[in-house]
Image 1 (spheres, rainbow over the protein chains, first blue to last red):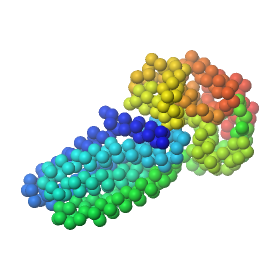
Image 2 (cartoon, rainbow over the protein chains, first blue to last red; image 1 turned 90 degrees about the vertical axis):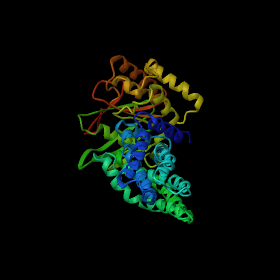
Image 3 (cartoon, rainbow over the protein chains, first blue to last red; image 1 turned 135 degrees about the vertical axis):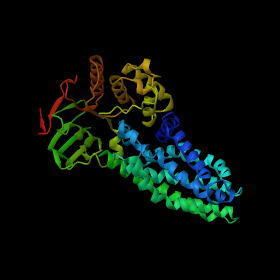
Image 4 (cartoon, rainbow over the protein chains, first blue to last red; image 1 turned 180 degrees about the vertical axis):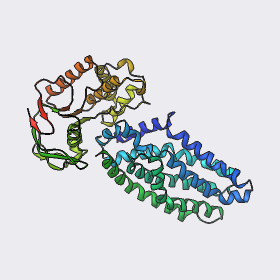
Length: 221
Length: 210
């Protein structure tokens, strides 16, 4: 357990640092969402109609931004070798790193999303649902994305490859994430969508550490 | 306690690096890997560390297959690769602190162990300096200091003298001698002379023991 926490704490420190992923991810997310009112015009009905989709797609893309560096920096300086030699299974090392990635990208991004939702004239009732859906959905993005990051280790164009590999796999998150918010906006129950997001997360949580560990081990050969 | 290697072969890409490698290492013994560039010194070390599966042959620890129980194998070895695994954004002391925590040292022992390791490596004055500002030799010393944080029997060292100055090489010699005196084993690849008293020599790729 202490080894797990040591990896999370170290990656958080690196993530919050000046060269870390948090600030760029958050700025990209805010900027990408704010471009839409400029692009489609300021009519409240149009903005309210597209708000959920815009925020979710921007969140998806923002989460991809720093993913290619998730294991790459550790591989470049030799740390990944030693993490693979750590006294805890490689799957848990991967889970610790993914947790730190979510804490520095998905979590702050989810927390700032309600502000952007107001900017886009989203229905008041839908905003808490948006927050809940993002908190449930973004960990899946980090987990699935980490598989892509591990698979592209050593590839020269990792930054482009990771989204290409990962985005198709996270389409369910987008569909149910947007579905939850729209259901709430129309006064329907968001429950089923949120449950499906939760189920997706449970599956990703169980399976992706194994896939990441296998991919990392292959990269270290 | 002994490491035995039987008929070991390694294939990288399409090329066979070495084959029919046999040796036995007992506590306190050291093996020096010799050979031209590309002869498989690093691959042998990575193979013994469990990163690479052997193409043929067996690695035995006390007569039992060593690589199958990966967790037990990891616990008894320390691997030092070409790279120093120093995070440039973290302080010198924090770099070591991370490894100490990862290796599961208890919180009280961690500080002391890190201080002792920094002292031994002569990096006490750089404790709060970021890793990125260390010289290549200092980074190498920091990587070697990490060896002191985890009690492991088998040390696998790949070119440990890289970028080290003469006094640091002498320190490395003491480190290696102390490890052997405690019953540790060392397998070391180097193309320069390392202060390693009566170590056996293994010439790659022929696999001849000297």
